[in-house]
Length: 157
Image 1 (tube, rainbow, N blue to C red):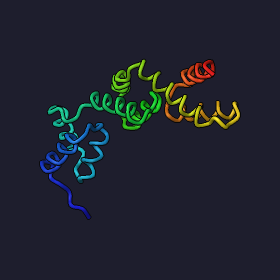
Image 2 (image 1 turned 180 degrees about the horizontal axis):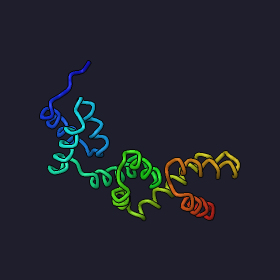
Image 3 (image 1 turned 90 degrees about the vertical axis):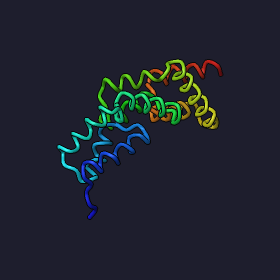
Image 4 (image 1 turned 45 degrees about the vertical axis):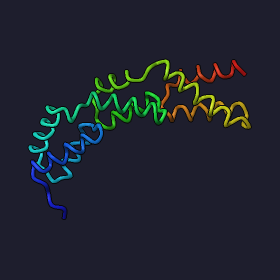
């Protein structure tokens, strides 16, 4: 069995954990419990981390949303669901999603639509439409925006 850390040791270790990369409150809490700490110690350490600005859920949501949009090309629905899974508050999710510029968002959706559409060039029109739509839904884009993007693409053909 792994020996548990003292609250002081855990605090030093968790500070490094949070300094390395933005973390959500729930991730940090789980990590603290994995050190074998009691609930009272975990709560005290969490509040110290927040006071010392190692832990900031608003900042976490902003980094998460911006990063997953830019790097993984995720849509807002998928980002929101991932943040909810990490127990981020609705308020902070809203702030995080504001990191995504609307023009960039639509441009990204358009690029993904074109890429997928070209990839399915040998498919029948109805299959092409369905597969492109499903792909973009899995990426987390809004159904109405997907329809508009495909319609715009088709009008150019």
